[in-house]
Amino acid sequence: MVEIKEFCALHYNIDKLKKQGLSLSEVICPPYDVISSELQHKLLKQKYNFVNLELPRAVKGKSKYISAKQKLVSWKRNKIVVKDSIPAIYLLQENFFYPPLPLDKNTSVKSSVKQYTRTGLFCIVKLDPEYKTILPHEHTKPKPVEDRLELIKTLKVQTSAVFCLVPDKDKKFLNWIQKIVSQLKPIVIFKDSANTEHKIYKLVSKEKIDTIKKFFKNKKLIIADGHHRYKTALLYHKYLLDQKKTKSSQIELLNSQYFMAYICSLSDDGLLILPTHRAVAGKFIEDSIHQYFDLHDWDGKELVKLVLYHKGEFKVMRIKHKLKLNLPPLIKDTPSVILNETVLKNVPKEQIFYHYDMKETISWADKYQGYAFLLEPISKEVFQQAVLNSYIFPPKTTYFYPKIMAGELFFDFS
Image 1 (cartoon, rainbow, N blue to C red):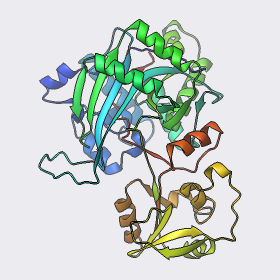
Image 2: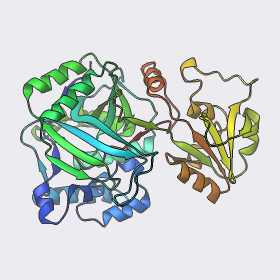
Image 3: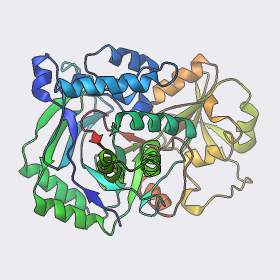
């Protein structure tokens, strides 16, 4: 059983931002795990940017968490950030292009570019420590969890949502929230730096919220993005349970039974699952490639599962006929799984370059005289069935586009 609830969100005060000559698009940021050091440096220079809370400047010890807390206290005191007084479920509709278009309106639209709309909702969800109704598709690593836990303990705020998907074969959930959106006026509309239009709506109708709650009672959620954020939420609740129960901590303890999620229908046509390509530097992997794969010329048009790029040449990778991989039938043709069980099996993960953009991956391979592995995306059907059957994919099998931006809404435990 998945239990969801409305909540009083923390968010930026749009009127205050306007007085400062700012828009919401200038203060939100991507989730911490896709912010490069260069982007972090740039965003930290922008006034009131949420990166100050989502990914504070790295310094020795715990001072970066204290700095983030000071920023949050200051923003609250000056009403740059405010908290809603009435609990609500918040809906987000995003209109975007893929491949993304620049903000320059004079740029001609190429025929390969398509426009999409994705609709989902923000709510809080009851924790499931046993992962019976909230299902992962990747493992977590200790270091990011330690960092997120220290941040949440200091701020007492969940800064960014866990991106969850709900199986929705008959599109009941999708059609329902699209209907709600059509009946409401957005509380804010803006375009981000990737030219994605965001429309945020607030739902306070008890009748409609109760209908949504009933829908989820016999459902399961799949974590798309935010495995480390979810693990952090579990550890944070355990941490509070281990503390002395003072009166001031009771609200925080009760709220910590929940985490903030963005939930989207798996049947939404605007839910794009992109592949994450891989690249490895140097020649040490060459023998392994020929051990497992036959290479054939590629014309760039034929749809194939795996392509190898090296020094300007593209080759189709086909697993050798005599080779038998011991893989479950459902995922035996998944490119990331095949690579993980063959040429990348003994390559340390920190030596692998991952990127959803093919050009970026090829560029990295050229820079380090390495090999790029270009992957076909996994289908929604295979992804859903594999996760529902408890299969854990290799790291970076999926890239859900666009990412849920941090700073639109955040969850205050105190």
